[in-house]
Length: 417
Image (cartoon, rainbow, N blue to C red; front, side, top):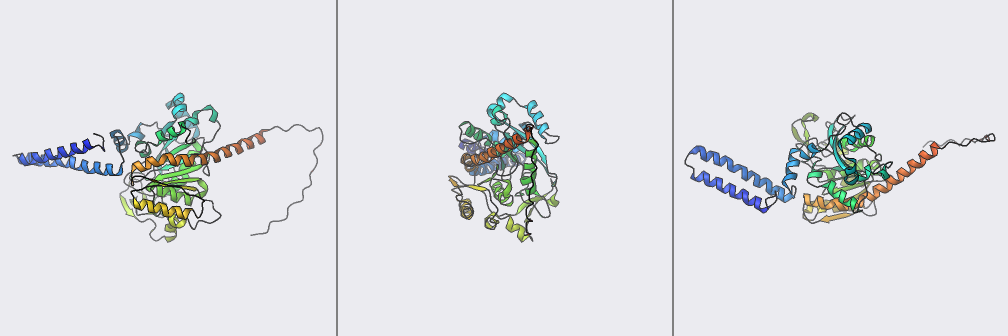
């Protein structure tokens, strides 16, 4: 009743606002009237914020709201490899800050930082290692990865505080409804004030390079995971959904599957830092103004029909809230276009609008669809690696006779193409 979406909370705000207005009416001294009028703005403002929160079904508990708005979730997570993200440093920090028995049962979440060697962007990345990562049976297994991209305004902690992704994924793993994968949640905007849309601004922040290349490269070097390719998935909601669709088409060889939750399929004006400098004043900007070719290539609804036929694109999975006609129509149109390249493109239509409840409901079917594909390619890659290592570590038996000399006719020269 008194939760951020509860009826009791709304009634409490109305009563408080009415009481303060009554005080304004009956107070005899001007100073008290002014004071009461100023106080009345607080419940009025909170009512507006609560109404927006209820409409989007975002924060369901006060704990989630406080953690997300204060950065509490990220602040409460272990900070690993703060001095540099390396495999040795991550393992040392895991040994020091986590409990192996608990990790083998529940997995673990931690925060780290990635610094892009080319973009020079440094941002926080949250990582969830599933229980299997710590189990003996998987000691030599390189895990598939799913990169999860948040909406705007937002940050990676929303995946944990609002969407409860780690709890839901653990439940699926426990019930054998999904296969183990490492989840990584990078900061795609660099702050609540920005909406970069994971784009490479020709004159500013190279956000796509950081999200699509530098974060995966850093995670691959530091954790026991498959390199970017068919064993990697990418998914996002709202702005993150656009990011996932756009990155999947621009880097098709780096991802095997893409999940789009209430995404859109053409860029909108971005909120970028003035001068492309972190912390700069946010300004609205069409980053591809004057660059029609870049605009085309970063518009998934157009570019998907022009990706070269010889290029295999990632498998797509779509979800949208039934109450948001714009999201539904955009998803249906993209589904039709994608099915020119793929046999089937699932589209899950969920009761609700462009809201947190829709994205939470979409997680289970998305993971159930995506993780078996990623695990199949990861297992195949692990098997090939094991066979290759076995072949190259065998000691040849000494031969009693002299090895025959082979005379090989050199192949004809390949004609130039």
